[in-house]
Image (cartoon, rainbow, N blue to C red; front, side, top):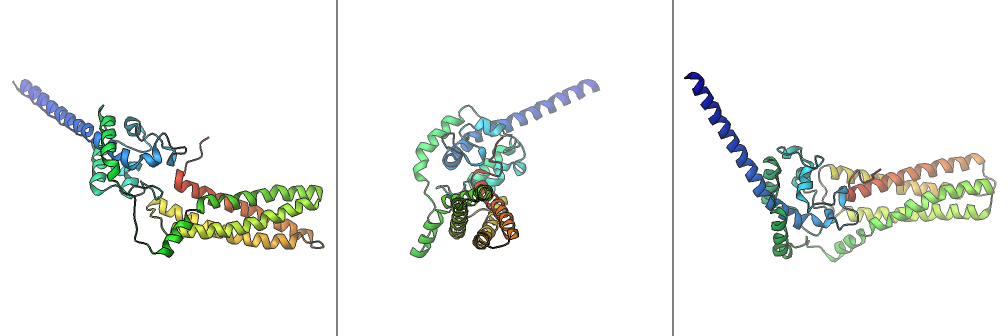
Length: 296
């Protein structure tokens, strides 16, 4: 009799446990439709397959099953260890470049509960998401700020920081092989190219740095991205100052009659400037595409 009682008790417990597990999975699948709808509205601008270079090398947000299966982004049952939830929770996604506001506390809670209950995906999630997008997309307003005309001008100018950053990168890097060609050939044309690239690179580095400070004024990065922005800002500023020093040394080093050692110093300083501008450029791109945007 005891054996029968224990057997029945174990069976009942297993049945209850199985029922509870099934209920959790069902809840997760039910939440998946809401999560898919949230992602459709808040995330496709940066993470859709149609984006040329999706941020963070993550361009399949419409495929919720693939998102849920990516252990770099989601760990089922552990939202506090899931990178996607942490970025959403800290308002790092959507990013500053997005035209939609961050997730509301209610939307964040839905994402958290979905991951907490196993990040399951229901077959109807995609269809529901499309319906939600069609009905709600127009209700999502871009971020608006009560800015004076002067601050609007600052914000407008700051938007030119990313494209302007290509000039100091290209010009300072080109100056190094041009310097090598001048050393080999001693042609005045190569010396002129070096001096032009360094002077123009320094001028563009100053402009880029100023535009970067304008742009950063309106950023709202948090968490790890805030630290990344700080490194980018100060290394970029150091690069601009270094470029000025490089241009000054270049003008002295390339004048006739100066010691050869001075030209060697110029080349070393130019090389350091190239390293600085490359690091600054990489950090800036990482704010948009993620730290691991280079793929081998």
